Picture (cartoon, rainbow, N blue to C red):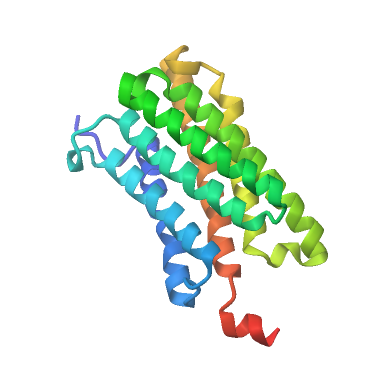
Amino acid sequence: MVKTGISIPEVFSIMAILLPVIPILIIFIRRTWQQDIMIFLGAICLLSFLQHLMIYIPRLIPANNNSINSVFGLGEFAVLLYLFKMIITTGWLREIMNTVLIAFLSVAITAYALRGTETHSFALAIAAAFILLVAAVIALLQLIRDKQLFIFQSPVFWIAGGNICYFSMFILTGFVGAQGKGTLALQQEKMILLSVINGIRFIFFIVAANMARKEKEQANN
């Protein structure tokens, strides 16, 4: 029998490729690329688009999925942490975030260079998720303190909220069948669940891109 249609994992792979493109298009259509936050949001979406494109179409690059995820994961970590650092105004917190960023990237690059991406990828991914989760919560708390009733109109709220949802679930599922332990069905269920949460994260990013106002609109208000 000839198999027709596409499987559920393929559907989520296609969604993972297409969803990050939408915030980029919104940023260009609304001409909000002059704003630093929108530049970093666009960079995150571009990294995610390229990452999933290389995984879905493996002929584009002769590398395994773990290597692709590790390299692009480091890029996303650096961009996201720098984005949250821009939002936070407390001086000592910004210094801590600078130190954490440099230290984590140094450790990760050294580990990958010496032992490859297979050895410590799980531990580094969980550590990165925890750091970004804490940074997103701090940024959201500061936004609540500064914006008060207008928090839902801020792109930062949707960026931080989307990342809190995703990285919370990433950490919770990370220890279930960790490092390939567990049945194949369990691993597939984890992948589908994280794909759904990641899709929700990018829906939040779409809202964030749409909430960004042009500089003239901000000046008038």
